[in-house]
Image (cartoon, rainbow, N blue to C red; front, side, top):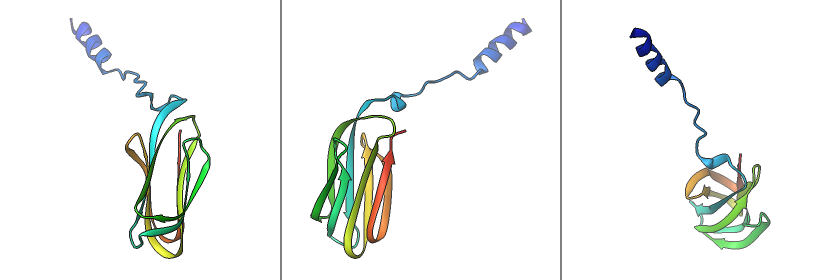
Length: 120
């Protein structure tokens, strides 16, 4: 009987392999949002970001805060990026959300800044 209890306990203590969510299965469809917030300014001279097709887009003289939402099918090692530029040092916060989850955020106190998110 003690052997049966030992085998039962040993079997229940084994680490079970959990494949986890399908987060790393590619290609996959995601929604992503870029948020640019001016902490010390209400305008960026230039904003740049990757679009739904993966192309670069530039917006001149954008009022802050600024946000844009896209849906896209991504592959492993695809990137999302967003950046800003101003003529003088400004405090600006950049954020990237994937499926409504914040995945990258940074605040800059400079004339320019950018962040990049890599799908791994």
